[in-house]
Length: 375
Image (cartoon, rainbow, N blue to C red; front, side, top):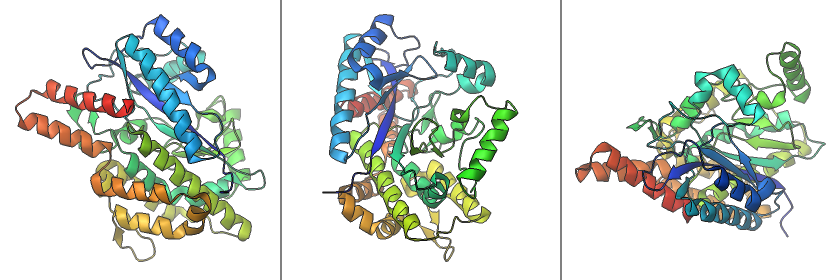
């Protein structure tokens, strides 16, 4: 039996008017009630009313994750379609305009709108978040330092946000660029250990810069609610298999690095390494699966296929122990065939080549996103 490396998955969705394909600014109250009745604690609101998030219970295997994600998506989609609403899991919505979006009524989100103003208004973004449980004997910050170099890989595989405000941004993950408007986002610094991290958080709270630890929104962070290390860099993925693949890759590298820490002292890297990770993040958000990552050992550039080779070599024993070879194989298919961002841009280009006006071309992209999210 594979070891039980427990984890959880959070998926964020846009609500779409199936007639216009545009965003649903204010969903019907009855729709929200029906969703909450069906999904209970598995459903939560997001910063904007046009978004919803589903969460899994604590999971022990990718098969269990598939069952829960399939069920949650299916239940939510069935309810939504009764109201003429579709679901889209992608980093951005190609037709959506951020002006005029309505904030959630939850107290926490009202405070975010008060604090961040136009930045909160522009947060028309959906992500995929993965929590992996960390044993209490393992320093989560040391672990975070060890897995941070793989964040650009996770972003490139998940990239699904090439369009913003009805235009092609030239990015494969514009969500990452938009999210950089927020403070305390992006790649965290390399703290010495969890003690140093706690001192940093304590200063921010004591100075009333933040009300609590949950206001740290890095691309990876120790969760303030659970004994987990949370991956936050990934765009929401319309295809369920892509979400499962990224979750499994992250779970695998966490398992590998926990073993390495238990085996003896590990190096946490330096400021240069952190900046190189940031450089690779730029490559991932700009080029997606066509990114060229830096190999610090010899300054060579590695394409996504070569980076996956390095990942598979580094995590070989963990892949075997968790029976995760399927996730490597799926990631290689994404590297060859493209992520959601590639499919979206190809559909848009084909529609424009047929002479369709811009809005109609983007409607076809939205239709494809709805279909992929449904299936």
